[in-house]
Image (cartoon, rainbow, N blue to C red):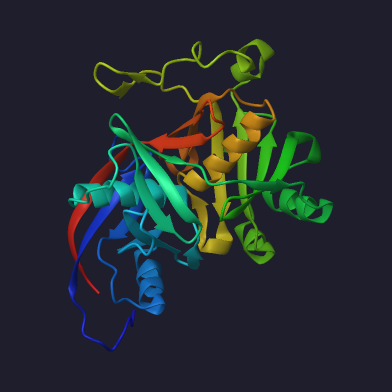
Length: 313
């Protein structure tokens, strides 16, 4: 890999695992904690080399409200926003001695704008960016269903979801259908469309459970020791991102954010739920979704550090 003819220097680096409390069961993220002076081409080349779903570069903020700025790269290009890089970069920045301006929130600057992140015990959670959604065209839906091997009757609802990245969100009729998918990734890449599929746990489909109050929802954490106490997910999710250079993303914050905004707003999920992702990749990602009293959706999860050192860039 040829990055540049200019001299390299050692830069602080971490590789973290996001949406898991157990190393190597979530979604890995490479974080270059000092990206100053790197060109776009150098950042992109390094992201191709790591071949992780995302690699981030921390930079000084350009806006007074922000604590730091981040640029997010997939092997195939730069993203304006992504969820697991947001939490993973924040975790790495804090661990490297980053000091936020506020005791309430950490403010990240990225191409989509300012993203608020708050601590929830041992977890971090980001405020989902505003969502634009629309009905997909019949042509696109037909092409994507063919690439996924799905029949129309298996799809309960479909929406184009845009919170920076654009996902075609599909709500299927069963978790088994989600877990049994074997997509034609070459076709999805040619279509240029990232696809997120999800299905609700059958128990969640009872109207009385959908309507339950947040106070009655199952607890997410045993606050005495800050450990999860209900591992059974309410929603199973998969993310197919061949246009970004990754056939299937292990655990995807941006997709889960937009799915939550859609599904909660349409009464298809309660205001607080747990999503699972990565099952087919032998991961055990867990994403905590919650809509607060103001209507803001928060996307949370644990982050663990796996590798720490320096990278020559």
